[in-house]
Amino acid sequence: MRRIGEVVDATTAFMGAVVAGVTLFLPVSVTTQQQTTPYRIAGLLNSVPRSAALAVIVAVTVAVLVSTTARPLTGWATATAGALGQLINHFAGRQVSTAEMLTTQNYIDSVFGAVLLGGLGAVVLRRRLPAAAFAVGAIGFFAFGDLAELLDIDADPYAVLETPPRWMIGVALGLLVISTLRNWSQTEEPKTPRMAIALPMAPILAAMVLALVVLAGTEWLGRQYSKLPAESHTVEIVIVVAATIVSATAAAMLLPGRDGTGVYLAVSLTAAVDAVGYAVRPGWSAVLLIPLAAAGVALGTRLASAAIAVLLVAGIAIFAMVTSTTASTVGFAAISAVIALTAGYCCGTARPRYPPSGVLAISALYLPSAASVMPDKLEGWHADVPVHDPTPGRAALAIVIGSAIGLAVLRKFRPRSQPRPKGQPESESLADI
Image (cartoon, rainbow, N blue to C red):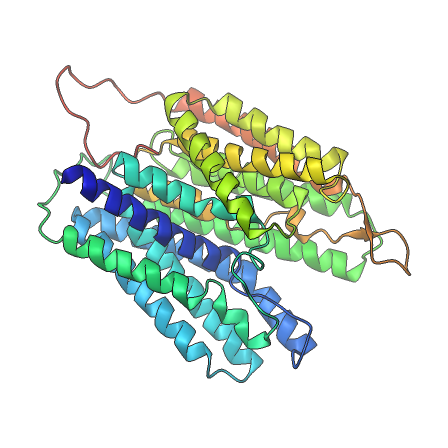
């Protein structure tokens, strides 16, 4: 029965992470058809990175608060409340008639998605199987990229609040209720030794530093491109890349032990995938890419190596420098498989010891990057076909190199955890992923 319960909770963790991931990564689906206005499009697009940055802070804060209670029921109930609030928000969104309210409800959607992600992560990252399922669900968007076709989003401008669709939120909510009831009578877990009395605030501060610096830097770079689209903006790109590495380093050093490894890998992976670009993938590709992500998590758990993870991410960035996903269908399929496998391997390798650190690493994947705000270059003023631009790949590779240096420094100044006395069990509060 205990094994069955683990499978049930793992299924819940996977579905909840999928809903939260889709919410934070693709909170809107913008269309230029029917009654959509340029003002509405601009407002919704601007809300995407800002709501993602807000969600990172909210998710980590929720995870810290849940972790301090040492009660699994608290996390399950919090995640259930987040999913319920999100479902209500989607039903209410059908009555929206103004661009301002659409943007506001997208922020609300992201906050509830963050509550779901933080509450769920705080409890499942303490257990091996649910933690693996949570990681696979959270990184699924890397495999899909553009989820519009998979989620069957139609061209109705009022369908912007159907990412994720209500049926997906409803399924996740039902599973969360089941897992909450299943864990209702769980006894209180043994408390873990605290490094310092202010330790619970460290992940929150790390999330604020990372999210706000990355958001400010990418929005500033985007404005520079808007003012002078024909310029190379090399200096501005260098500044944003440096700010990203510095903020990731500050966040990593604020986390206990070597938990900052996940932050470095998340920042690097996001930049590399943004440099490759997102394109429409058929829905059936999930059948292949999700198992690849799961295989990556399993491989990273058994053969953890930050060096291998960095090399894999660097390979993705180099691919973005050399060629484009539109150049070859075979190349596009191959890089999609590599991204899924690499994302899973990075999750398995990170292994944060404190659950909120894992929530920060996962939620950092939804932040924008320097590569994401660089516009496509066109072949000519009369053409709509983009020409390959190696600049995003170069920026991503620079972030990967900076993160690799940061990882080396982190491992030098943060020794491994001391081995436990023989026969003493490892605390369940330590994350396996």
